[in-house]
Amino acid sequence: MGTYWSVDPDTGLFRGSVLYQLFGPPNYFNTLMKATSTSFLVAAIATYIAACIAIPSVYLIERYKFGRILRYLLRIPLIVPTSALGLSVLLLWGPSGLRLAMPGIWLIIITHMVFSVPVVVESTIAGYEGSEIRMYENASRTLGATPYDAIETVSLPMLKRGIFAGVILSFTRSLGETGATFLVMGSDVTVPPLVVNMAEALAIPAALFASAYLIALSLLLLLLFRVVVRR
Image (cartoon, rainbow, N blue to C red):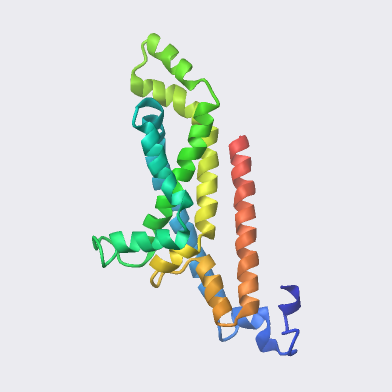
């Protein structure tokens, strides 16, 4: 990217540089900032809803006979190609299906939520199976705790690391999702599809900058979450 910063290395022209495409007439900088805010909003909402669904799902998976079936069903979005996942969400929830959401930010959130739930579930289950939570829950029950109190005061604190790990993975995957988002985004563009649009428009310097920008954001978030989890 450094070779494109001030001039196009092939033509020597300023109009082929990163600075020109970001701040000149193409004005990709404002577009990138808007896409960034959309990406963070989508990732935050989708991850929050996914965590709210995943935690009780883990309880059902670990406590009931149908839990194994539920876990297999939740794993499906992890193995389906993202473009097929986006198309499925569009056909089900979009104008051709239930008509509950038009292509745009809410349909993006629904799509990201679909693949975020199993990520949080699998991470939390890994923490559950790697501990003796059931034994501590039973001990708290014998001491008079209600099932709800046992979950709130025993299970959730012990599952905290697994939940946080799932949230981190879910959030960062949402930031980088491209294929599924393309099919449901409408006019609300996130950063990864914007990079593809830039490349298709032959705005290669701007696309390189946006790619480096997205990688830097993801690394910064991973470091930030790591600090929070350690505390």
